[in-house]
Amino acid sequence: MTIPLRRPDPAPARDPVAVARALAPTLAPLAASDDRDGRFAHASLAAIREAGLAALTVPAARGGGGAGLAVASAVIGTLAEADPAASLVLAMQCVHHTSLANARGWPAGIVERLQRAAVHEGAFVNALRVEPALGSPARGGLPETVARATPGGWRVSGRKIYSTGAPILSHGLVWARTDEAAPRVGLVLVPMAAPGVRIEETWDHLGLRASGSHDVVLDGVLVPDDHALDLRPPAAWAGPDPVTLAWNTTLLASLYDGVARAAQAWLCAHLAERAPANLGAPLASLPRFQEAVGENARRLAVNRRLLRSVAAETDAGAPPSAEESGVVKLTVTETAIAVVQDAVALVGNPGLSRRNPLERHLRDVLCARIHTPQGDAVRLAAGRAALGV
Image (cartoon, rainbow, N blue to C red; front, side, top):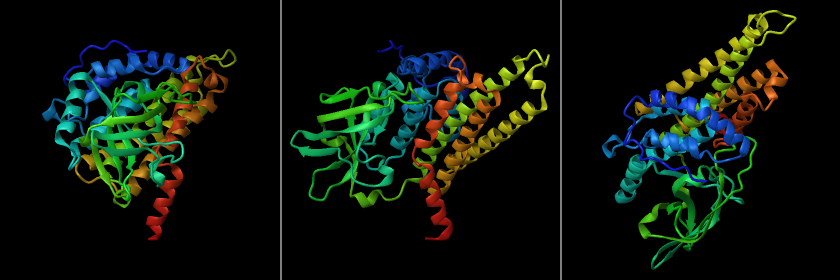
């Protein structure tokens, strides 16, 4: 299904966070409907695109919003309170356009075309990295997806799984290896409309059901020589870029913090409205509920401080170390999970009823644990750093 789209605004004319707040009432009912039907968030992303937010982190010199991490984090968190699946697609867009703007040695013409497409067409990109056998590249290993050099360009073949936003992407940044005697590994830009690209609608998950994270099959897809954006020996990819990692972890953490804030808002409204006959007053009047809500408020206040500090430091040119970025992502997301789980436990059956959004928030927030870096990897890296081993 494709939603007809108006030409997007060249850039958000107002404060992007205000734009996101204005969109939220439109996105929330769409998110509930898309989740129930397992339908991709076309309508929500159409609204996001038409508001100019697809170009949020495209440099202002190219007509984009030129947003730093602090603004992008606030936008993603705000939209995630209404529609986390659509927000995840936008979060990946923001990360990759920031990387494009900071890339060194990439073909300037290609970078400019992608940036202008985001501004004038609302075009989306995402990295296609995960594979059935490899899993996440963050765990190491060579991809099975192969780019073969031919006289006409590169022929790319392979299968990518968990390809978030696949139905809306104009291009995929495909993680592949060459078929050379000493393989190089890196990113090859693949137009999603190219012959040989096929989307298999495999995404049927517990949470973020509208994110369209389907399989993408690449069957000898021909791309020009200059679409091999960054190919290096495998060892040259050993260390993550601190800025890119800070963006990725902060936007993911902001998204799941937004889910937790939506759960907290629903909980407060439910407790204010629910007045059992034997009590004769709303549940919100009872100290037990007041304390529980206060504990969640405390957790969310700490989350907000963590996210703001990392964003401010990154925007100032001093991003945290890879280990610390992982720690912040893990801390914020585990806190978000605790907020939603405790809200469900506090209200009982209504919290697990599909007629209430809290059940969906619980399913969505649990997806935080599968995003790289995962909890075990974060703890291992932090432990090794602390021990100096």
